[in-house]
Image 1: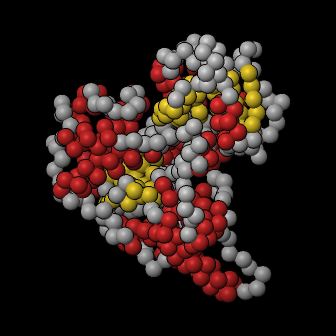
Image 2: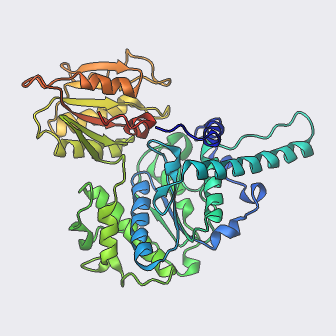
Image 3: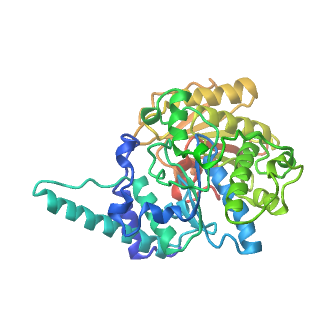
Amino acid sequence: MAEPAPNYTEAIQKLNSTQTGFKNLRKRRPRWSSSSNSTISDLDRLNIVHVAGTKGKGTTCAYVDSILQQYRMSYGTPCKVELFTSPHLTTVRERIRINSEPLSEAKFAKYFLEVWNALELTAAKAVARSGPGITAPKPSYALLLTLMSFHVFMQEEVDTAIYEVGVGGQWDSTNVFANPAATGISSLGIDHVNALGSTIDQIAWHKAGIFKKAIERGTHLNIVEVPSAIRGLDIKPAEHFQRQNASLAVRLTETVLTRLGIAAADDCCESDRLPALFDQGLENLDWKGRCRTLVTGQHHWYLDGAHTHESLEVACSWFGRVSGTQNLPRVLIFNQQHSSRDPVALLRTVHRIIYDNLGVVFQYAIFRVNSTYKDQSCNPELDPDLEVVWLPSIEDAVDHVKGIHNGASKEPGAEILVTDSFHLVGGGGGGCYHL
């Protein structure tokens, strides 16, 4: 593998120096006009799709992008589409895509350093005006990437962009668009309680912050159901929650296509069949990290980045349905990195779905010890016969799985559910599940 270019390495080092948590969201809103030659109004001339939610917002955005790519390739409209999502699986470049492709290392470095240098200049001027002893705060990781995405937007002459909200909505760094083409909210659940609150009502208030003055503009709030036109499609995974995400994406795409002057269909979701390009966009999407299966020899990997109680219920139910056909040992690899989430409570959710509801039995559980949870005495006691192993890295977990043998044939092999962290599902950036 080629070494990254020096400028790209420099950009990643600077970006990683800004890592922050989710507190004080309001203070992290971007002051775009003061740190760039562009302004918010420059963004509003473009066609923005903005999506919030607890579960499925990234997948919904990816579906919109996939459908729009079909129209771009067939009709040349939209000309260029940007997709902004988070988190990433293996490289931060995945967060900003142009026509479905992550930015190259060269372009990422170029645009990031341009934004970084502009911010540094703005900060230096502010310090000079304020006098000695004053320092300018660094922008957060999410804010930097958001500002960079706006810069990419302008430099690449994008005409349509799809933005996934990072945290919440009202105070999220992406919530600067005054005139989006379409906004949507996917399924809600309890997450980021330190920043958003501990009830669905409180969380919904934050999510709804991306909605603009819709009634004044002649639009209405629509509750999207799964139409018959989507129930029969070959969507992967073939789960109800994924069809919900696809249904929201269809509505959003239909709206933005209308704004672009393309008549997709008269009310797609009310028709018995979707336009062919919608079908192709939905069925062709391969969104890694969500209900994904990889098979290498006798190792069957089931990867899902679920990290809330609700999403873990979905991931575990999916695993229970699709696994068990190989008569292989089952392994759970689990790692909760976020300090605001209770890993033991999340494991209880796994236990309830896997053991109590589906009757699935794990023979091995591997927990990755990280800087947040180093207490190996915290034994979740999922099952008295379960072999529990604590390991320091994802690579160590994979190596341990290689040594697990099928009791009948004595050959290496297992069915492995990897969940509770996109970092874990992404193989720590190295994609190490290809054994």
